[in-house]
Amino acid sequence: MQIDLRTVSITPLRQTYNHIAERLGADKPASRYIEGTMNVQPDANFHYRPTWDPQHELFDPRRTRLVMRDWYALKDPRQFYYGAYTQARARMQEVAEADFEFVEERGLADRYDDAARRKALDFYVPLRHVAWGANMNGAYQCAYGYGTAITQPCLYAGMDQLGIAQYLTRLGLLLGNQGELEAGKQAWLQAPAWQGLRRLVEDTWVLKDWFELFVAQNLVLDGVLFALAYKEVDQVLSEQAGPVVSMLTRFQAEWGQDANKWVDAVMKVAAAESPENKELLSHWYAHWRGRVQQALAPIAELALGAAGADALARSVAAVDGRMNKAGLTLA
Amino acid sequence: MSNVFIAFQKNEDSRAIVNAILADNPGAIVSDQPAMVKIDVPGHLVVRKATIEEEIGRAFDLQEMQVHLITMSGNVDETDDEFTLTWHQ
Image (cartoon, rainbow over all chains, first blue to last red; front, side):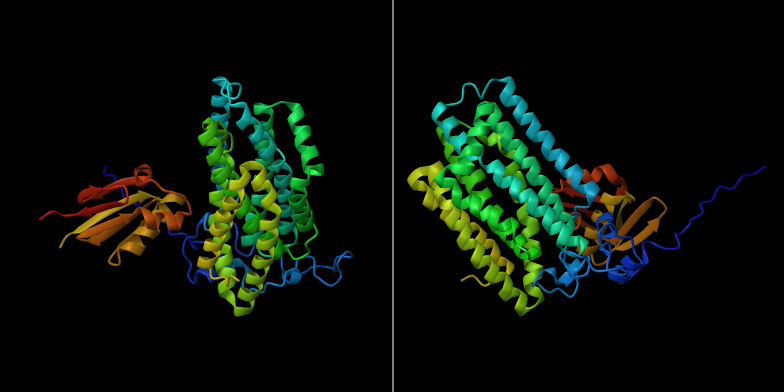
């Protein structure tokens, strides 16, 4: 008996979903990010308008003054859907945990220079309240925003900020003790140097326009604060007393870079959509840039003394440079 | 001129690699087979790290490609940024 082997090629009837094929222009395989993001936003058959906001539908693109023909144009270059996002963050967390373990095991925190320790505790610990504010804002953008391409990474950023608040708490506990967290909270609530920033954070909580909030929080506040805290201040502490604090803030430093890539891509597409958008975004940027600069000035001085003003100016200039590239008109 | 080729297992990562190869090699011919995708190019095939990173949305080490690689033919020249297949004649 003779057996002939042959391969049978079974071609699938379709490569992807119809709505994805329409977007891609052909029925070809799409990435999981595209399949898990495009057209996920509910946009029809809402039964009635919310009683708390009868001017708008439950999900409504008009909750911001920014106008987009297609909200799915605001894609995330990191291609984060839930799976990719959690995997990427798990990798970052693993590295950060290893750093914390290293510092603990070798007793590096105990032997850390006391002047630098005081500076690190006074500067970094109250920032956990800023991170918590950012967590609230990320959740707001996701809840009231429109289009999964943008609301999805907004919530991820919000959750990351919660993680950052926890890392800052652990930094406080490692370099100091429980009392440092309480002292940090008191500084946040009472100390004159922090009141400008606290006011700014609380003002962002009551912003109605979610895309303006994105500009205020993710672009300006995060952009300037992360450059100041995890580059400028970190560098000075590192020169003064070695890289212990750099290790304990590694997650934030890496996260800032990662988030900037996303924010820049979103701003670029939103500004290129229309001259009106460009003007609106430039206006929001100028407004929040001024406020953030003002709010961070006393904090920069708290950490860096007389060199604080220059460090802050460099941090602001870095964001200016990014927005110049993204196509905004800078005042 | 004879073809060089490279074949990958079909998965999420290799889709980005294949798209990058197609973008960088205008003469490429793709053959989609069950669980495998094979790319033939006359004479010269280049895989660029930068293009893959753009497609995949994260940093990519060219050697990660080996995990998905099934087979290839051609003389290999490999740097951190590029992987090329040619026939030395």
